Length: 247
Image (cartoon, rainbow, N blue to C red; front, side, top):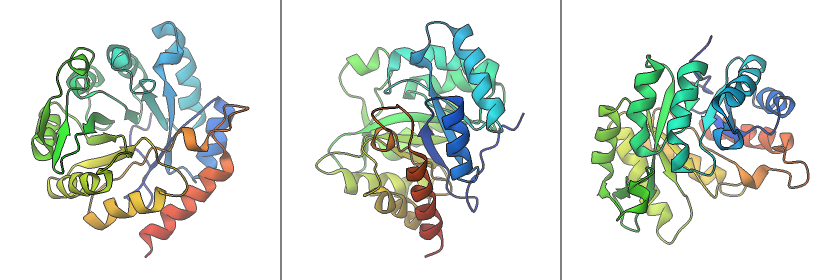
């Protein structure tokens, strides 16, 4: 089973939610395979139900499966780790404190595991208290360089920077992108990304020199009536990805 993500020009891979296996296939084809499809663990009552269903997504998309928490819910952290051990997906979403468990249970270093950090309002500083207990405590504010080093210690692959909204968000995000480039770490911007700001957000990371960038575009491209991620919007995002890399 292929555990390696398919990056466009070895640089960019889109992450969107898949509402069904058919929707996953359509999105996968729209991005010409340069995509991972998010399936949320929170949508399942048991590990068995999640594993059985997620296997269908993996089989239909050359294992372009991204095991998700569900709105960044830290209480899903342990379940995501358990599912990932069995499924061996290409991509795993984790809160900061869940990264080490996921890597250990995966038993290999090919799968990309992100670690969730959040903005603080201060450029160069991030909040790493995103776990089940730590998210209920005072913020754990550390320099972005320290957050990257901690994630590397735990076997993480990338910073999941959530969210992209806020007063100082672009300047904070630029500092995160620059640190990821400097310390050879991947970057996954998420939260509030849409067709209007996608190009700016991805371009900042590309221009900073980040090795691998995995932008998450979720609710803004979901059809509210069907729950499906709109295939036409995925096509539009893919066109933008190609244009950004060919500037």
